[in-house]
Length: 383
Image 1 (cartoon, rainbow, N blue to C red):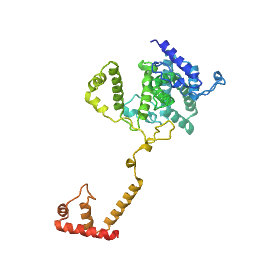
Image 2: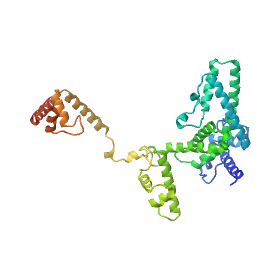
Image 3: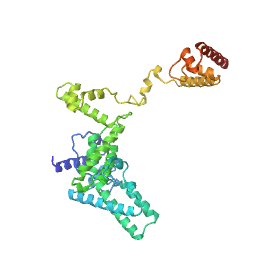
Image 4: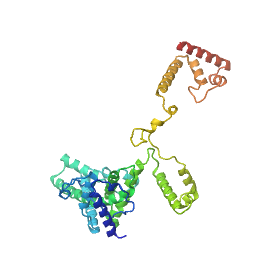
């Protein structure tokens, strides 16, 4: 499919949803639609302008209308913008270094440990620059140069973000999930877009939209993994499970049985891996989740009484255990030791009188006498 056709289709989607007053069609599945290679506006404010007139819709509708009014970058403009942004970044960092700011202070979190794309956090660059300008410990010449560079830097960065926001929406449409609102997927995709801007190297010869696609997709997928279940599974387990479920649908559509062998062949995983993953428990859910349309009944309401937690019994047992510990601590050392060993109060198992005698250097009969004396004293304390 040509790029023109893809852009036309996504433009049509934006137009239809931005004009949808009720917003109902916005929630329909668009899995058949492809990704648009260029995008538009994220950090721009979404206030309505003259083209909206008196028709004020939901925030999402206004956001889509705003995106549709923005122009896309041509490949040449995109390359020029990314090169200029990287050049401005280097000049600003050089000025910050002259004033004692270290490169580590400007690195994105975790980049050094990952071994690194050499990326600098634009948020940290802006913050450190504002901090330096606020101190006043900078010459007027350097101040003017830094302010001018920062103004151009912010403008180019904003331009690159805004002109790729349609790309974010196109990718987010492919990952719609009831567990996460669509607007949240878009926001996470916007975060991935900004990470891509920080790490993109135009001298490598790649298109920025091609590079940004994977960062946007990664942030969206991480969000879905974080919200997929109350008990989080490792990312590799979730990926393999997703491939297994996709393979099950595939082999069934081909008229084959969804056996472990067929699934392993379809996914390329070991059959032992497939079997172990299919044995994992299903998604967990809260006992407070409603089970009826009126939201008045929950799973906890239908839990058997015997399985419910008895708070009174727990408190009573805790008080009894504390009183027993206090009573045992009042016994003489030998009697306290014999009693603790006999009933496993200081070990994982009970000990016989013979074992107790061996540990304390006593006869078995003497250990029994000390045990009897200890019990008599405990009875007196409890009267």
